[in-house]
Image 1 (cartoon, one colour):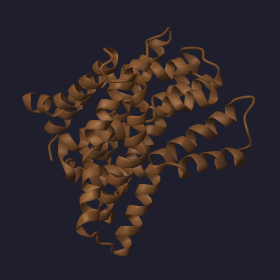
Image 2 (image 1 turned 120 degrees about the vertical axis):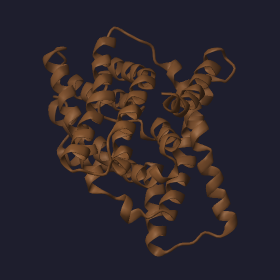
Image 3 (image 1 turned 30 degrees about the vertical axis):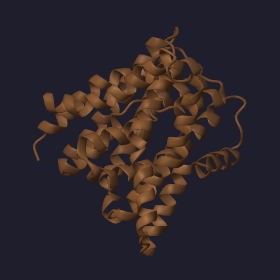
Image 4 (image 1 turned 180 degrees about the horizontal axis):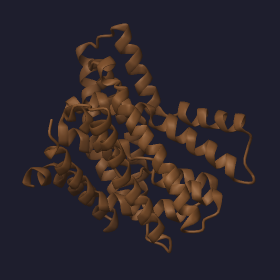
Length: 314
């Protein structure tokens, strides 16, 4: 138990520092968006590029991990929609937004720091192979589903074009693409360039955690907290449970490798669920509450998953 606490304590301490700094006006609230923009648009693309360039990318791209991860995410998406419409009586568009809230993972701001802290840099290649597909798959599925169910929906072709533009304009995709090109072309960085990417990569963890902690000040519990709690439980428990069963029991992936995909699937909801909800003006309060509840609650659930994975026989 002490080993697990030693993994997560610095992570959530940094998040608590960010939250407190903004809450008590020791750090400007408007600066948080800029800090997160730095992480997403500059530091993390550098980390993705450098990690892919210097790792065995072909070995990291493991369909026995990637497949269960995304199958679990899609099952959670459908489950979230059904619960939102049948149990909470949401309209179809609001149901899709609620389902998306329990599907899209915070792979960068929370996932990367925890994966590195828990399993070291050897976890990065597999982690990055999942992150590389994350936005492309889930944003496209979410947007297409939303357009199909809402009355004022766009055509399928226009929706796919919009989704493609959103994915293609993401600097994370640029970093991944550059890293893959560099890897397969045999690119070798000279020392000053390597030092630059190493320093930028090292900035990801503290800046990301401080930023997501500060950003939590924007989200307040509203009347939809009970629905957001259900979406949070789907994200934190159901998704990793599906990944665990498929990877360990069905496909018999060695736990030393499977744990990367399972633990990443146990991360809280990402900020993009709020972006998605505001883009379509559907389920905004549920999305905001899900980010808040899942992020705070993940301190307990991630600890539980770390314990489960550490006691899973090899």
